[in-house]
Image 1 (cartoon, rainbow over the protein chains, first blue to last red):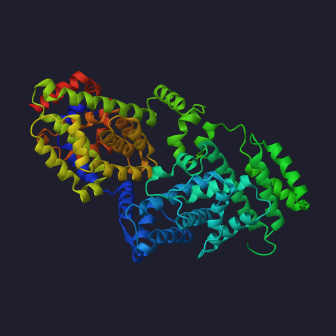
Image 2 (cartoon, chains in turn blue, purple):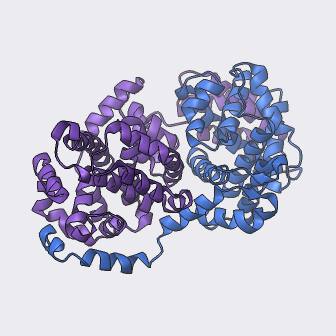
Image 3 (cartoon, each protein chain N blue to C red):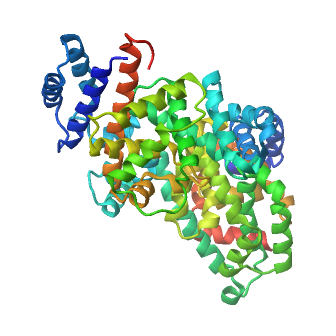
Amino acid sequence: MVTHGAAARNGTRVARIAITLTGVPRPAKTTQTALDELDKPCPVSSIDEHFMPRAQIVLGRISGACYDSIAHVALALAGGKGEIPTGNGAACVRHFSKRSKQLKQAAQIPVDQRFALIELAMLAGISGRWTEPAPIRRTLAKYKEVSGVVATLNDTHGANLEHWRRLVKFHWDSPRTSASTFRNIAYALVWCGYFAPHEREITDKRLATEWFGTKREEFVNKRVEALRTLANLLEFSQQNLPGGPL
Amino acid sequence: MNEPLMHALIAFAARYTELDPSPTRTEAQDLARDVAEECRLDTRDADALRNAAEQFVVPVEVSAQEMLEEGLLGDEFLLEDAPCLAAGSQDYEAGVIELRDRERQASALSPEAALFDAAEDFAERLDILIREHDPRQSGTDTRFSAWTFVAFIEPCANLKIRNEVASLGLRAKIRDQVASLGPRAITSEEKQKLLLSCDFHTSHARSIRALRAERWNWSHYLVETTRVPGVTLTLGACLANATSGSSGVSDDVARWVLRTPHHVQTLFFFEQHPEQRSWPTQIDWSIDAMLRGVSRSVEESEDTADYRDDARLARFLRLLAK
């Protein structure tokens, strides 16, 4: 055993070994570097060339459908400004990663569909300006408004995305939908789609209290129920298809 | 698409949601049967609806703690609700206190508990060091305390926000700032000014976002629970890095880092590299090396424990300051 004193007497040892080891790239640094790069402003024209390769470093191997989901949201974030604003890129990729993992745990939804649901909700969030200050949403009209933004989104390219949109629309239109399920689905959609560069703005507590004016516990429980409803609707719409896909 | 079944499922979800408390599996099955009848589903669809009902039911025997462990409630609950849930309490503050107590009583190898304690320990010791080396209080040559302060910052800069630091020129700013202070101690106010002038908090905020993305949530937790945010973050970043398997740190070393106050690590560096006393430019070597296992053996060293003793630590600092 080498004691601290011995290490001190052999003063150059630490430096020598560190130099040797620092030549080995560490995954954490690679990811960190990619996240740092993602946080820089990125012109729309460079999303495929610069943004997405770094997103893939952060997320690991992803399918083409997942890739498209992120790219679409990146494009939406750029909006009319022509570039993804500083600080948005890394947060966007992390949002996908985090929500996807959470969705997997809360409801059995395949990864491509998870990304598509997050994409749909984020696109709705951007389109519906969910991050802008507004009175607390506690009325049925407001809950329905959330589903409505999702259900009426235009330009939902991609089969998974369109499938989700039509599911939400089906739910929105259904005479069987109650006020409480509108509320729960709104919880789930906002949870999926509310995006801000600072992660502490997207906590359950914040969304629950500041967006919906409810307790965090209720928000979480009802959101999980809604996600299961959506997962079941997805499954049914895929398994019970006498008339073809939804 | 089987629209009747889809509508029935929506109806089931609506009824299920309105039941309070959440129904058991049997009640959910009964409800599904009722809804199937109301919606006049055929036998096949009624069976499908009952199967779907299963998916809605959170088994009542699953405790909040188990849900938490499953990750069912999501990442942020590790930060926000873990104390409340783990303590089985709806009172968040009470839950926090109880969880902290539990953590302290837990195994010394619990990373979270060790990290939490280490952070508190670090903040406290830093305050002591600054007070001890404040010329207005001690009247001694306190040049070293400025070095110490920079040494606290440097490892973080070298570890987690290296790229950002380079882009901001943070290190150069720190050097200039500290050099302008001259051979004397820095006060808490100066420390804060220095941090602000170096835009250190902004850098850290970004760093912390990145850390959280790597599920290193505890560093964020430290920001909100310790008294010296900027500096404690240094510890948080280093320790969070150490706890990450992705950084290639062995468990043994991670545990050692978690248990060792950060300034003690810094002192190891100074002892190992006395020629660097004028400026700790290569502190990253030390920290990097420690994280990578070079100092694994130190874990067993009696000297490690010795330096945790405040009096001996202060003596060692004075020795270096001469």
